[in-house]
Image 1 (cartoon, rainbow, N blue to C red):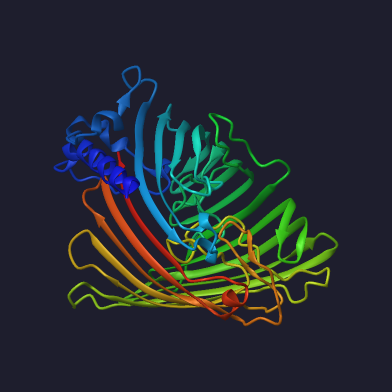
Image 2: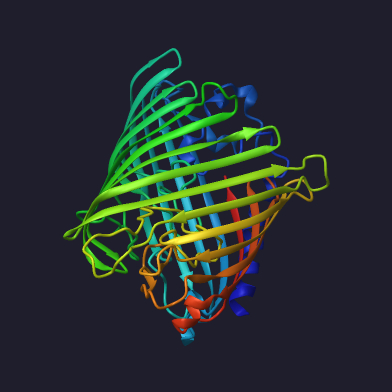
Length: 464
């Protein structure tokens, strides 16, 4: 309770700090990738009427040397678990406070050259088992990259981006900034970004950055390489519909699955078909993986769908949704070959804010309901049903760790969760969110000695 009281006091302090922005002029919403925000329109003094406009556009040398833009985020997040990861050990019941501070500077030297830098500090207090790998990072250089525009003509442009940077693609099933965790994910990368109207093609070669708890000690993960190409384009014959096509490759000398550990070289080919037609929205994705793991071959796959229908004429604009997904698991632990899907670098809260299960070796069915009962309020209700795709394989955490290894004698059914999430966008700058999940342990978890899980979360974030 003491930590919850501390969270409430600090959250109100941050919200009070942002109180001066309630009446700010209309501005675009903040983006998940802060480097995608564009404040060049503030070059016109007549546009500078907002509370924060003074730090969003700072001319350098009377605009002869471009302009600077500053921004940041302060987030307080309180979490509580009972039987985290289905365990009954003393450190599986916990309540703790997490804080995240981000501050960035975006220097547009000219139309063809730009430098973006961001500091991150992530703190954790009170977790009985100690901080998890992504909970604590005293202070570090989270992003620092340069953009060089190679050419721009009509609606076409080609940009080279070099340095430490966040990357996010598609539904973040495979490449994500990992927003739900206390420390966001970055990559040391070189990228080529081609844009033409609504179409884009990105090529990249990178290494993910690990989170180290000290000050300015983060570094890319040694010998782990990640590369690929990701294209997005409108679907020619259907307005409002788009198509993603991608190839992703990874080389990891220290991969671990329920089958065992070894060197992994894996290639992923995938497609995503998504958009909105009238009251219907949908998001379909399918992928195939191949390569080598230790002395064996890799063959893995996944299919995911998300359908929604919005009753915009009813109170709360209810969206009735149904998600379904399946990802392959290993067929034979005694075989050298591996069929377990590798989700690469997915979002941390893949299924729910409780972040209990990762997208490997699973069958998932998720009916859900979204309501907007008032302006800037969103309520999400849902229930997930989980099964193992293969009895020979186990279940995993969102970070890829093995929770329980495969056992063909145990049940396929993993469990069911009920979840509630409420979000209030108080202002453009202040967001308050809360979530609760109860996971009913299924036969497979019970057979491994696991129990039901309860999870609760409250967070307040302030952005500028």
